[in-house]
Length: 323
Ligand SMILES: CC(C)(COP(=O)(O)OP(=O)(O)OC[C@H]1O[C@@H](n2cnc3c(N)ncnc32)[C@H](O)[C@@H]1OP(=O)(O)O)[C@@H](O)C(=O)NCCC(=O)NCCS
Image 1 (cartoon, rainbow, N blue to C red):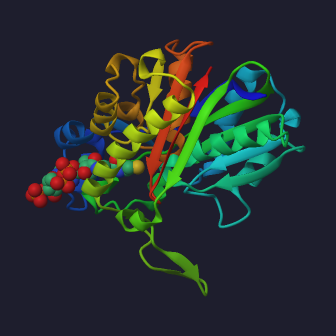
Image 2: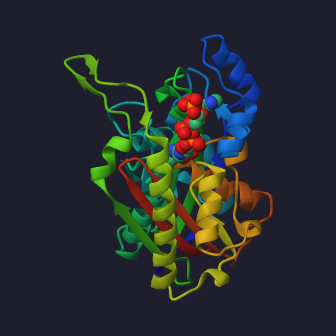
């Protein structure tokens, strides 16, 4: 028994903000940056920002509807919803439960996965395990973020990197090969290099409510984690990188993506890159990139795809599948 992806979807908020526009906004608060700096260090050209009244479950709803439509599956047929998010609507209930109500998937169990930018890979791995264990037959997996809410717009080293968005897939139990191998990892000892360290205590936010990042430490750990885990899933499926049609790494930084491809000796023409258009959308980045490449005709049915995530925790992981 395999789990197979039968539909993909994504959603971006209306407001696209180019590097020049962002630089002009930040300049009003005395924060200096430029299109040249952002582009040359990260490859990012623009990002999308949610409007103040849009939540992660709102973005997730549109992405999920697109994926269900492609899969030709009704919300009532879904028996499990997993949402990967670091920017949930509420402390509880989960964003997955809120999405369940919005989409009308009344027969589904629903829960969130919190693995920051690896969230989608963690959620897909969990969904695959649930299907193969006979616990679910049709699963909706969504990565959705309004990450911009956690950014310190006075910290130019981090605020220029992120954006908002959502991506989704529908998985189905199948006898035909789908997900071939998955691996997930964590190293909590690296929690200090990337975090939002605040919590709510006695009705107050205690600690730093904004994202903190040690950019160089994240960069170094991301490149080695992504290279290693790609090889792990290839080995688990008894495959080599030459047999892959597409590599979809977490869309954080073009230089991390290029370094990962180089470590695998994999041509950049077969790497899906959307970070230039979307920025880093955390748990949404992989499904957003995947859906973009499916809908623009790059990825087609029957092709072999390796997706990978890396981020706060520190967490990382990969899934190898036949689409
Ligand atoms: C953040 C990142 C782009 C910074 O690039 P870097 O080459 O390491 O740059 P540094 O932090 O050394 O900063 C170099 C200079 O640029 C400046 N700088 C930082 N951000 C800037 C910005 N947005 N605009 C202009 N200048 C900036 C710094 O102040 C520093 O200036 P100084 O030399 O006068 O002190 C890079 O470390 C990175 O991409 N890390 C990974 C981040 C990531 O992907 N996180 C999410 C993972 S899930």
